[in-house]
Length: 473
Ligand code: GDP
Image (cartoon, rainbow, N blue to C red; front, side):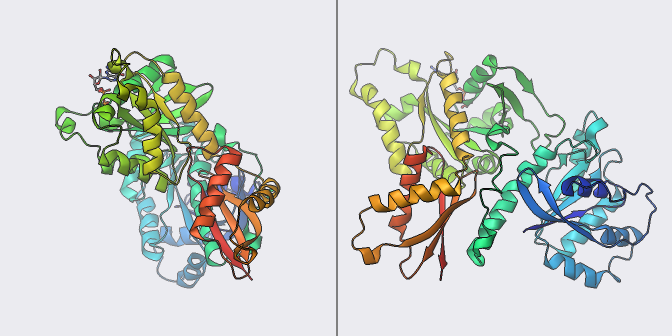
């Protein structure tokens, strides 16, 4: 199991969070800031949704930090603890704001474990109206934007889950690659649906060149829906985050700030800022790439270089992708041209050509200006998100595998790889491990075949799929 260390100066609520994570109440919650009682580091198995990890309560270190003797007698203990820690949560008390000792803890961590980038959480945020000020103070720690939680009430635990989940899962996948014991594989039991991930808020990035109609589309979407604009508690990861509800699901539009508030200067070169888009890619679950129908036609149905780059990168980064062809109203009156007839056929083909590794990327033709097609956009976005969150049980996968392996025509039986066991290790995006035995390993083409079959048989269009091969004796 991966290990997460809880760090923080005394009295920020470390024990309270520890107790919540291990679901025990017995551990004492110290309430006196000057408590210098040396405590051992406590360790337990944390349960957060369907995540399981070791959690360390670094009370000992905390005491040393606060008494200013960090480098002294903790060195041995530190080495021991850090050697088996992969992740850290740095807790601050939102009511106190950023405290000088918080910075000390940060410095300590940077010095002793430079490989760990802690998640900063602002605890005790249940009673605080605006967290912005503390959130921006906390940036001084240099570990990125904090998330708001309340260990007492449980507020923000879903956000913590959302942030931890990909980190822990990527770690699990890496471990499988490195050591790869079958015991580490999540079984169906682990894949419990305590938290239905597809119901979690969807982070959507609308990207595209300037003037393709991103703002217009956003307005069309917001007009339809209940709108909440601006930063709010627990959502401090984005400076500005536009939020709305679509059919009972919360949707965050990430990184819209850049193009909503842009100036003429930014309208400059008609290409898509790759840097800005890369940031969107890291934050978004689904990327909606907006193209301009007129331009597409002018370019004989091909996408520009920057659009191709961004679409490919979305897939490489494991994001869901939906392509939107906007300004269809501009083609009115030209319905008889060859190009017009072909555009609906040609764009999906173009996309399939530039991104051969994913099939079934949804393409939606709309007029943002007239508000036509916006429901379809949201339907494809949410469907893609659901597929991106898919989890398939090991039983089902292995039954499928048997069928699919017999369907494939291998050159000869000797060249047929023996997949002993096939299992999904994570979702968002769906990632599978194939345990292969014997001399014949899976070739690139076998992996492509399995990927394609998975997509078709389990309807996973528009989401990247990863298959990792593990060779077992
Ligand atoms: P952004 O830079 O991608 O945010 O693009 P904007 O939303 O600002 O739109 C750029 C221009 O295209 C504006 O003049 C819009 O009115 C226009 N536009 C956007 N969507 C459509 C559409 O569906 N049809 C037409 N005809 N014009 C559109």
